[in-house]
Image (cartoon, rainbow, N blue to C red):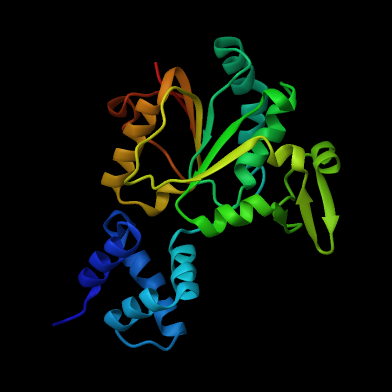
Length: 258
């Protein structure tokens, strides 16, 4: 039997529930082949067996394919729009108990940024962010809340002073910010989506998905939002068919469910 990439995708689906068919094949296959050769393993079948036998290798694999590039206040201009326009609009429309979902939240930079940004508008005890990711390793990192100086470079100075403590070369985020975020594992391509959200933030993740998978996720986000809710996407993404999906476009990165 030829243990090709098709075989590998099926085995990974059975092992992890991650559907590699939903990722751009050339890009993903290249990443996986690089990882396999790093371990000096020959053949997909032997690598699958190694993933079954070795917990550390299995976790490394999941961490590697769920691409985790994250930083606080990524693309500050867009966060300025969120702060000055979007949050005030949402609060006047839905009140102070906003339901916010940070999807594919990676190491927590984004949901913690949301708490800090929202703290300019609401007391901390009224803020609750629901944050999800496919990878339990990055969720564990998020819960620790320790970041490099590079990661927090775009955080506004007043918030940096208020909510970060230097620990050696790293920076630890304040427990009062961490307490406002609830982390859960969630697979965007497989699991049920939560409902009646006022804001969903999912940035620079779907660029790795096929057009079909992307379309499906955007449709599900639209269903997840309350009427008048907003989807905030990344600077590397655009929803070309936003009307078909059910959105109105507010600007390049913010889409409203009518």
